[in-house]
Image (cartoon, rainbow, N blue to C red; front, side, top):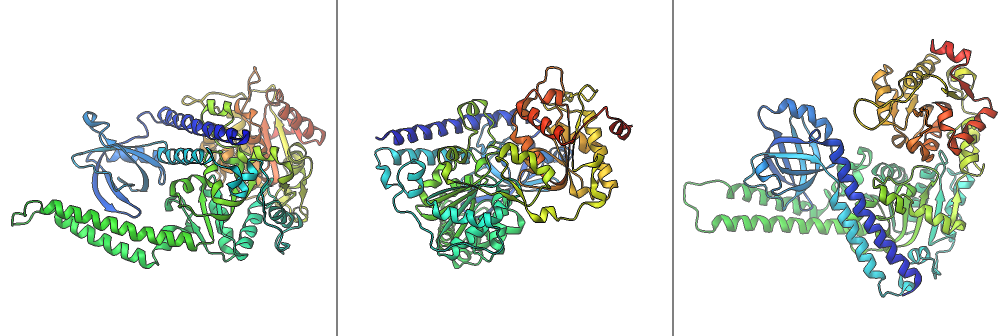
Length: 636
């Protein structure tokens, strides 16, 4: 066994261990957050309908007298999330628990997709509670275990080219440039990025800083590959990233298939899901007919008749019901296999691919978007199934979300793309022209994170200014330093988050001033790293359309004006997870035309990043003290 093979097997074992740690951390988080508050208890099962793909739809309703409590708690459970179903009777608390996905929530009812194997016979009342998605974790673990066995005793040279390159082996024959891409809707750098992907096959890395059109570039490349006769698998860590890219590719007239649960797919692209496309197939029509027969027979078998049934008659009828359902599943599987074979471009989340496990098919290309937000574990099972891979993302923006402190300590928060960018710097292409930020906003992120290489497109320079300039205190960037004032952080009555009421008031005053200058509230975003602060600001705001949210929720998005509340202000200069400076980088790069930041820089500047930011902005006259006469008048 080569050293690289031994290292890879060791790495896969690390990934499997991190999955276990992350699963436990997710369970701990749910227990800590929910207690008894997020459980929907005292539910009765009203009916079970057959669904597709070996699943059924269970309908629950609040037991009489519990409607008010259900209405209070239902907001804690959302459509599309995994839930654990168990008996609400303490005597049989752990009897027949199962996991399902919430399909629909009504006023006093809830419907959940569960496995057809679930049989709640004999149970009178149930409870539902959010749970960690153990099924996905288990499938990912199984995929990694299978991959480990493939490496054991196998010649690495027999692996697909992309995987050989990642393992730092000569890739053998690679794809060569067959056609120079010069798409008229792309700029020179974006066209060069596509050529880079072809010339550096089987492994290419595309870094897309904020506003550089990474999604548009990838969509154009996917359409180019499909029209060149290539089969493309497209994946991302989140449903939102998958659907944003899918929508652009579909608008180019490319036939696409979207894998995944329909509830987690954006309505604009649901026409590309398995469920939507299956309806037009002969196999699906036959499966639907068989299910109707099975339901009718099941209903008949469950009814009493005047004549005494023959011995074993009902048992035989139920066996026939199961056989009909099994045959229906077979026809539906045939339809799915045909769709997988016929679709030139398949879109999925990384975890969705592991769940669906589409056989032994090979794809010519794998495109992973937002790759720096993806943990390594769900990426590896895709690599043996593709010849060439493109990782697209930005190591300077948000990393993978990892809950386990131990897993983070061991390196789980470092994405595969980030690691490959260090190992293969020659395979990394940086998109440099950005279409979002005015130069005043762009300058610091460019110097700090991108070696000063970002360029504002001429459309940014010539873009019409906001109403009345919308320049608070005479600039497009304003940082208000609250050092030495009473703008202190506080712990709210409940939870471990933080608030800064004085900052909240100032941020809202700034938002109202922008509106008074003529900017519509829906074009303004307020970003804060602390959820409690976001909730506090939202509770004080009367501006309809104003968006107030966390950094994570604004990733990949933009607003004309962004206001940032950094919250931290304390005598010991503790800045908590603001030390993960990529969060602040994301926050300040969401703004197109105006950026306002409020924070205590005597607390923050103890960290090198914030010290550099403060010095940079002070040199350009962007920093004002809360004690300045003009600011003081504004606050009075």
